[in-house]
Image (tube, rainbow, N blue to C red; front, side, top):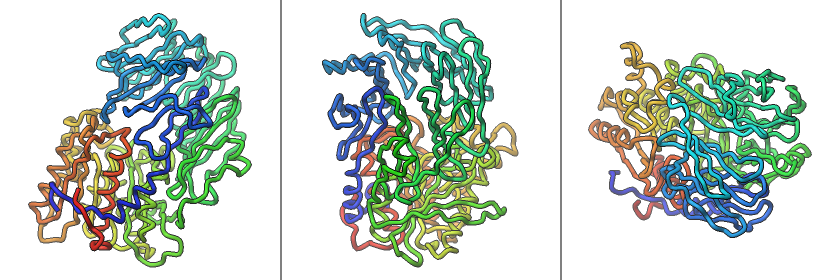
Length: 582
């Protein structure tokens, strides 16, 4: 293998194309949905409950916010996959689209006034509060705290500004009178609730405050869960969360959990990946490795209805293995039904920033599994699958713990006769790619190959990445010689430089993204060069027109096809099927 060509497995490529025909629906919002329909390259906006198009661009829609009267929709549009969105307002009656090319947005919340006449957002580069009078097409700009990351939220008639600073609580401030309503460890979302109260959520807590005084009405907190989404209907709160490595749906009223439902689909392990409310009803998107995403109402969910049919002859099972310190690790494995004995396996993880890595529908999974392989996801410390203590155990100076967890998960799969090192490929994206690379190089013989996508691989030079400065606390401390030495020991690039070339090295595939605005590709090229010098097979492949966030379906296909072909080539299972080169 080299950096200029790569053998594509035609059978896997065709299988991937078939599974990509499933769409990715969204939840309704003021009568509209932001979805990718089956076969479309990008997401579009449609009338809820139908496929009637309102807006189907070739550009990437990063976010949408319909006005309360439904006559207009605020959008963040990015022409490339670099996530550099600009504000636009769509007239849903005429189809006219007004671009505001000087107002750059990157997933920031967009808020309408109750009368639907004006729109506000915190714009970037530079950060400022922008208000747009859509009736008169007038734009007003005001400075906001330059030393904090600010986001704008709406709670009923009140506009609220969240100010986040490193190593400090996030402050919530009323925009009209600058009154401080409170400080919180984190703020993910804010909603209006009851008559004039404000609900704040983030991490593992919900707070309801008086919107005038900031007095707390009630609080709910559970350190064993990680909230992933919240929505409000009347005085009822629905929250999707992760508890003990599994997706659950909570219903709360006045600070008390009334119901908690485990999430499954037709008896299969499943996850909630979106949650929303519209027209007095609450909607959830449910999916699993072998179950394409589908939208159901909470009423359907609680009655056991709305289940989608498993899309193939697969089964997804949770396995538990012991880590070297006695902790229990969960590994979710999707296999062909009835498969016994070791099989070629792709093992993935994320393990950082408190983000839960749950079983979801990704076309590469059924494409790989239907050809006789297994696809596994490991819950390792540093992620958000088992509460705050789990997350903290793999954070900062504890980052090695998550790396060792992945190795223990791989050994567990081999010990359960599901795979073996000669049939195992580790794969991870972004932070998960860092963990995968460090694990493969530190735990020699654990796998036959590893693949990373858009991963920082030189942990002593994080600042060279566009967003690297905000990752420093996650990976560890370089302010002391001891901290620097700890980082060097787990940094994939530096670990590779210490390898004894006399030992067999795993194959390496580094996928870099041509329009990535978060991770610099240089780390992948540097790691491949060091590994090749040590005698390993190493390839860096650049995905054209691809970025770290939203991507066209054809870009996703090319990345998935290269990854699957690498896994097939590396496990030597279908080399006779290899055809054209990427």
